[in-house]
Length: 165
Image (cartoon, rainbow, N blue to C red; front, side, top):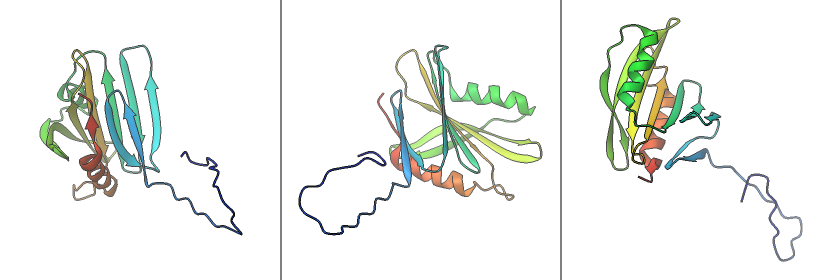
């Protein structure tokens, strides 16, 4: 059943009341990668013939990007390329919990226009000869802890991230 879809109900009803509540999450299911994300996040897709597709999910303090490449590429390489725009930013090891254990990744901490930005990259399984990278960008709290949005995204990824490969 889709949102707003009318469903016929058999029988006789006198003054029935129905309340339909949408799930608090939506599901991104593309190129063999699936996970849930908060319903209120803004969704954008850039899919073309260039060998690169990007799905972007944006909340208040966190942005999640799924990259699908037609060639192999690592999260570390992608994050290092992103770090060039922030100057000499050290790349650190990190991880994100998933239902199969901790998915290793890389992280850079930077400052953009006076605002802290933490960028994490994770390699996902992909078909042979291709690449899948999950990027999570967060605006951490003043004391360096992840934002509430990042915590919520982390919990959703921990329980819903799936790949077909």
